[in-house]
Image: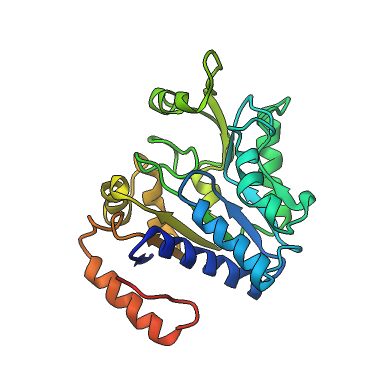
Length: 266
């Protein structure tokens, strides 16, 4: 696992976008695993800029999103498909037929989850998976206690998650209690993974996920088992890391060898 601590959220976002761009340039038909939430918004903005100003071409790219609420139509302003349309898909040239987001209105969720897994494999697996991390250390909707070998499945949301989500929905509007999510095992099969996190509120869980034991109680800790993971943090999110000086030194040595890919560390 490579850990990169940048100075700001903007630096974190730019570096993550640069790594995604490098993947696309290296393999135009790349399969990208994408995440939602506030953290990747800056990364998607930078990808849009690279597309519009530097011609980054998404025309052969295939995408698979991590998760979606059950019961929300794709047009609902809190659905993850709507989020992706607004923050990326409507602004780059990825073909609509190449976009995969779990379908929250599937007639049979079980059948859909099996199809989603098979579809990922049909495209040769995910080349680069982008992840955020939840406040309790979850990746996708693999909340505490999720099996580290889990596959795409229906997941019951915790009471805390449901309560937190109420602020996004209108008065009297039902908050989703279930989601379709890629499993930890599915995520770990990606060829490369980039996890991004920012802010002081993520500092403790980031330290636990990176430097603590591997545990189903912190599903992000399973990334320690993957052979090619890059974690990109802003300075606040990396403030609790015990080995921060070592990560900085490694980053700086790599920057000397790959100056076009690696930016400046803190």
